[in-house]
Length: 369
Image (cartoon, rainbow, N blue to C red; front, side, top):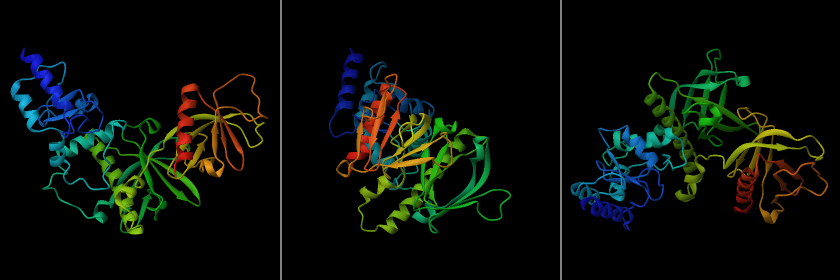
């Protein structure tokens, strides 16, 4: 009797308006099916797995499968997600990246650990100025030429100077001086082959340059903390640059421009400008903020082989799921024709699902302001 009654009360709490309990307290996933009865929060299945590894701080149960004592129900009623947010996220800096459900495990793990284990965002926490938060120095392992191996390099980030530099053992001066103005960073787990791998991009001589890095340490948790700290330090430096350069722009408009992920990336085949050349497989990345479709011979290449600017529909840009009139194929394949004022670009997708995903993503850029 108590089992059914308490389960009904718990589910009622999960759906209660004004509590924030209808979304995971850590990643925002809707309809969380788990809860931490030690913290008094409702969480999703994936985040519950992270909480299980923090037994001194959090204990989890399923809302539907486990028995809930009446005392725990009362505890959940007196706490909840909005209560936890006010306490554990009181001092989250505006540049700090708050992961979503689709983000990689390292980001979600360190967000949860930073909140509950280290108490980094409690109201009593120490507040660092932007220049300090956006400055960092240390070693990262960088992918060398020819994608052969990662090599240890010294990196230095300075928000005050507005640059990021890295050095090799042999070089007296920096191998590269990267302006924070065009600096971007995103986690790339599959591409780098490391659970804590980062892709750093910047503009040099008018071209987008890629660096692939990760942090090496004997302890897994330290590796994860370091790489997430580097990521957020880059975000702090970018935020400092944006705040200084655009003082009148409202913060909600600046935050999405700090760093960005590619909207979509993957393999497609492309032909040349005459549309008679053989199709070649290339790795494509869509950068919606810069409105660029970049393509590479290999996913880990430092420089793109080319890029296509994608303007708005009223400027003559369009995406179609058929071939131009003069192009013919023996066998029907899932194709995309990207129409621009200059030429039509023809791509072959891996399958129908990928075709829809690419078309949706490209249309998303074309229709954005």
